Length: 557
Image (cartoon, rainbow, N blue to C red; front, side):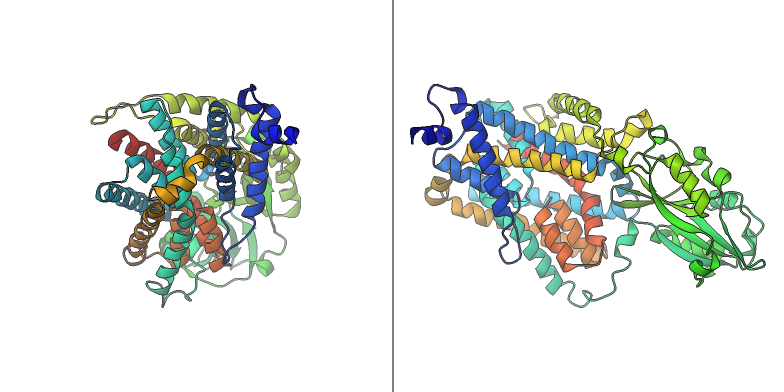
C-alpha cells in the first residue's frame, strides 16, 4: 500500500517525488483527459481541455509535481504547440491578407479589440484584479498561448506566479466554447434568418482559385500572345487550355499561345477577378473539356524534389519543354494561381494538365514521393525554437509602459515559425512537415501545457469557486465571449456582407476555438468556407491575443 501511495503522492526526500511519480501523474493526467475529451455533451466536446480539468482534480487531492518541474514542462509544451501552428499556417500566412483575406482579418482584429475593451470595462466596474480578468479573457476565447504569455509577463515583473490567471482561465473556458457556439446560433436565427438557405458555392472562392470558361469576343486581344495579354491587363490569371474554333482542336496554353476570335479558353483565377477577366476576353460560355481535350489528363503532383524548393515556377520552363500546364498550387489549405513568378515549396501540390506521357515526365522532375515527405526535417524545428526563444526574450521598450514588453515563449516561436516556413524555401531550407507529424507535435505540446496548468492551479480551485466569488467569473467569461462576437457578427453581416458560413469560420478563428470550428463545420457541411475563414484569420489572431494578454498585465497590473 505504501508503494502505491508513493507512486501517486511522491517519495519523501526525492525531488518532485521521483521520476516515476512525476511521469505517472503527468501521463495519467493527459491520458484521462484525452479519454474524457471524446465525450460529447449536447453534441459539443471540450476536447483536450479535459486535460486541464483532470489536472485540477489531481492537484486538489494533493497529486502534483514540483513547481520548477511544472514550470519547465509547461513552457516546453507551449513552445511546441505554437511552433507547430506557425509551421502549418506560415506558407499561406501572407497570402491570407490579399483579396478577401484582408477583410476577414480586419473583422478578426475587431473581435480581439472588442474582447479587450469588454475585459477592461469589467475590471474597472467589478473591481476584479487585472490578473484574474486577463485569465478569464484567455479562457473566454479559449486561447492557451495568451494564458502562457500573461503568466510569463507577470513572472518577469514580480518574480512569482499569479495563480488566479490560470484559475480565471479554467473557470471561463467551458463557457468560452459554448458561448461562441451560442453566438453563432443567435446570428443564424436573427441576422441570417432569410439568407441561411441561400446557395453557398461562392463562399470559399474569395481565397481559393476557381476555373471559368470564356469565349473570345474581344478583337483587341486577338493575334496577341497570352503573356502580353496578361502583362498589359495586370490581372493575375492562368489560361489552362484553349479550344480553337477554326481547327476544332484543343491545346495546352503557354505564354506564346495566340488567341483568335471565338476561341474558347479555360481560365484559372480568384473569383473577385472573374468579372474583369470576362470583360477582357469576351463572355462566359459552356464547353465540355472532357470531350474537347480527351487526349489530355489532369493530375495532382506533390513537389518533393529538394532542388525545386524556392525555385520560381517560370524558371522551370515546364510548358516549353513538356507542353504541359501547371494551373493551380495547393498550399496550406489554400489554392493559389500558378503565376510565373510564384516560388515553389516542398509539399506543394500542383495541378498539371497535358498528355499522359508528358505529365509522367513532369512527375519525375517534381518528385511526387510521399515517402520523402514522411521523413521528418528536424533542423528547422529546433533551430527555429532557438531563434524563437531568443526573439521572445528580447525586451522592447514602449513609451508609457513601466516594464519592457516581450513577445515571450508563445509569441517569439510563433513569429519565427511563420517566418521560417514562409521564407525558408527561399533560403533553400526545407521546412515542410506532414500534417500528421505537425498534429502530433501540436497535440503533445498542448497536452503537456494544459496538464501542467491544471496541476499547478488545482490547489485553490474549489475554494475560489465556492468561497471567493469565482462563480461570478463564469458570468464575466460569458460576457467577454458572447458580446464581442455578436457585435462583430453584425459588422460582418451588414457592413462587410459576409455569408454565414464564412462569418462563423472567422468567429471560430478569432476565438482560436477548435471545438467551435468543429461545430461550425457540422452546421455547414459541404462548404469549405468555414475552414478557410478559420485558417485565414487564425495566425494573426493568435499573435494578437498573445500580445494583448501581455500588454494588459504590464500596463494595468
